[in-house]
Length: 327
Image 1 (cartoon, rainbow, N blue to C red):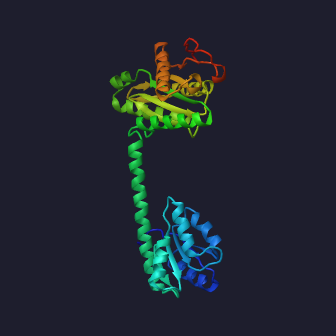
Image 2 (cartoon, one colour):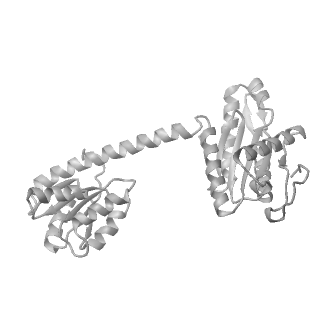
Image 3 (tube, rainbow, N blue to C red):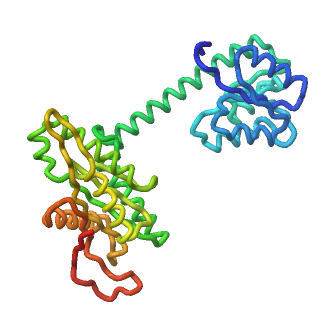
């Protein structure tokens, strides 16, 4: 590992005070930050911390011994890998095998040869850096697979998957799920008269506004073209109507300036809630929110319409005639 890069912090788990101080002094001389634990209990707490990426564990410690700590941390499946070097006076082949099988990455006998330890730590640093690069690559691939390339919000497949998951969870926990289907009014006209770059800018600005005006755990996705879908867990039809109206009003104040022209976009929004249906399947939710959206567009655009509302589930006997309401 290059000394120009930041060195990983190291946990020293050693119950012998003199050995611990000697280790700490050398590690700090080499540029490492250190944390010291004097028993297995302290070491376990430190190992669980996300910032602990490298550990020197003494085999024999009060509380919990080194190999057991290795087994525990590997069973934990931390998102950030911790590289572990076991330190012990044991040097038999079976001891080495036992330590490595417990989950240690490396094995050194005591007393420690510090030139050898420095070289092994450099190897550990390279492995940690490679692990970080792999995780970053996986994160980028996940973003490419789940995010809309233009707006950065969830893509169609992902927002629909979230809807499935939230509907299942809502059914188990007995709370409603609501959806908002959103269309940018006269979007084709904007593209035709102002150009596609302005249309793209408009979609991006709308996406930012949508995320700004919902709760952190609500999900906002691009459903297709100039259509967006928002999934709101534990949200009634009345509550979702307030959210939709807040979004409509906020986007109505938006101004996008072009050469010699200002675009003032408006939105049409259709809301649906699982509390309105005896069997609120995914298809039904999409269909009803889309139907409400169509009603909003037919009624003049720049408005919120609600799906056909029914009585609460405990009072339902038969369906009421469908109706829409402007908010």
